[in-house]
Length: 149
Image 1 (cartoon, rainbow, N blue to C red):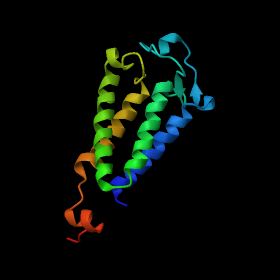
Image 2: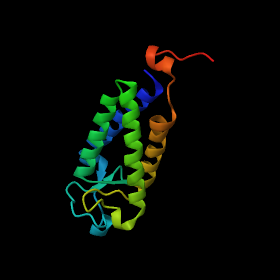
Image 3: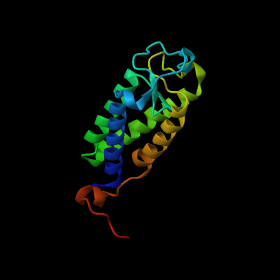
């Protein structure tokens, strides 16, 4: 297994666990006031995961899907690069959207503000490395062994 595949597997497991945690009341703190979730029209399961990260049911489902995709993508180097590249673009866009007040609720469905912004940015940066920068050489792709230089 290559480093990119480990990234996809570990990211997948982490996202899946975060998605599950979002459905467990002990990990979710209720918002203190309606204004805590600005512009959010879909408030089912709204709260703060670990008291820091704004979530709701749809946000949890996205985390579960991203996690499952990462676990599945980790089986091959090609799918790992596709997953990492997609993750970089997706979370990069979410980072930018989280900085703009008009888009912080993704059209009223999913909260992506506060601590989510820096977390999405870090995720996008790491995924950018594995999706676009770290490229295996041809020998490594063919045999699975790193060429000595």
